Image 1: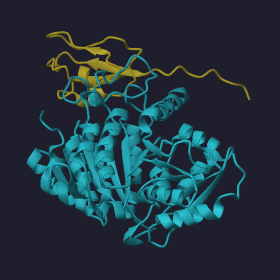
Image 2: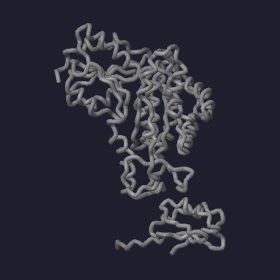
Image 3: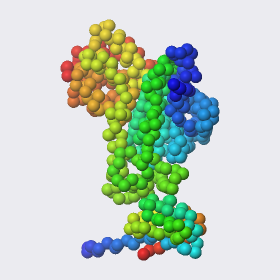
Image 4: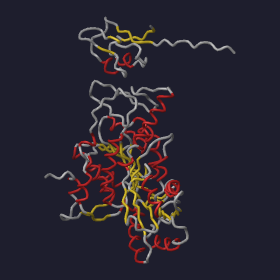
Length: 392
Length: 72
């Protein structure tokens, strides 16, 4: 059988393992997922994604463009995606701020694209080569208006590969921009992983199967079908609130319906969108909820804490938004407290607290000095807190 | 204050000039409500004038200036 993850396989050092840098793995994932258009502007710590794309895309018949800034980059990606091309761009904090307006446009115009944000310490130029998770809320609420968002968070090099593929799938399936968050440590880290894991994330033709035409007889639909360019249907694309014809409307009823449709397509598919991993299910007295590079520390802390007699359950989230409401609430019902280690001042902890406060206590553990949260830090904090809160 | 009954807005709809039309069918392609039909070698017909949103896409796209907008 012919392998479909050809780009990744070129990196193998032997049959069972390969050694790749996180940013490179992201670019390889994009190529294997069928991304054939990349527009970007180089920025530490995401530049390597652009470098790989610049070298590899022309060879597979794709288009690479270096733009004058990040605003132009995302706009070029939206344009490319409207022609049916699978597009992607990569950036870091300052560039991500510039992209915000166009992200809103992409949500409104239902143009699928993938935005990789390799987070640096901020605000502003901050510390470019320092890991951080400060862009979590920006990824959710950066652009104005009530909008849906799909945000994924990578915690290691293998994640960079497979979550990029998942992001392409979600973008095409839900016709909206998908944001992949990574932090500097994940982007610049080189590590080995088994190429076998790639096989599980293959895109099937069903992921791109849209047969309906642009004008749909029913007003209420979950996902808008794509524009059919090159056919007799001539679509009109706008960032204004539009009706089923694609032209702007001021009708209150139609406006509400349109905005609700945008949200519903994400909310109704939460089961499909929420990727997560629970370690030690039902056996923990306390729980750690983590994502990104902190999730690696949390997984290591699990073993360490067990040795010290603290049973811990670890919820590793790959999808940050839409919020995995049911999963967090279920976890909250069975533990004493939830500890959330993250490289910011508790941005995601606030979201988890909102969901879990009826059942348990949520403790935020933020670190903003540019260093990582180590497994030892997590275990020490757990030991401090165990027994302090009433059992759920 | 006395309330006055609101005026019924009369929308403009496209008129097709048979002398200029070369039957290319572009107007039918761009119509967002798919209500223009172009019969073979004849002038386009507005099938459902009520559905027309007066967006003027057909007027804009026509290469031969054969479409003009007019009120009923």
